[in-house]
Image (cartoon, rainbow, N blue to C red; front, side, top):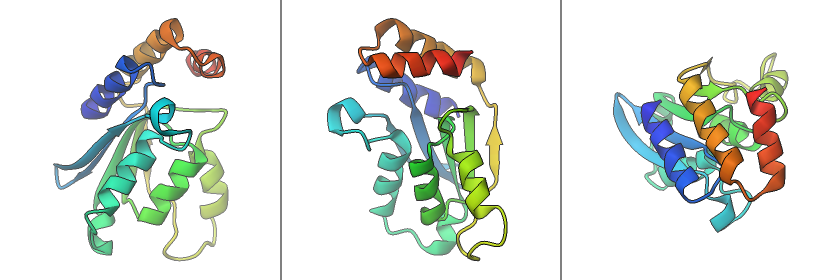
Amino acid sequence: MKLAIDQARLSLEQKEFPVGAVLVKDNEVIGTAFNRDRELGYLAHAEMLLLLEADQKKPKFSQRKEMTLYTTLEPCLMCMAASVSFFVGEIVYSLDAPEDGGARLANIQFGGDSIKEYKLPPLRKGILVKETKELIQSYILIGENKALVEYSKKLLS
């Protein structure tokens, strides 16, 4: 998770909303990414960029199931669905995103009798929350996107 925090710092340095993500398999970093939606467009979330990068390496299905996605903020529904579709074995995140977090919404879809292959992976949360909140607080001070600044305030409340 510390590497994800480092990626979020890189995002913040570019005045992006501070989310960082890391994909790991057997303690080996497969890839890292940070939010780049100001630069690349609204869909350039850290998790999406990371999964697209990892997919280029053509990992086998069995390898994907052994990967852990670390991210500083609960993935949105888009990133959660991409993680499920990529067959990530586990998702670990720091801070809940109560308004638009994909964990709750995806659990409604994938929590019961769903398609065998498409199941929500195990989720762990609450890792390095203080560090993530500090980055979000910093974004509030420098953020140019008023909507994201307001969203950030809600994350901290």
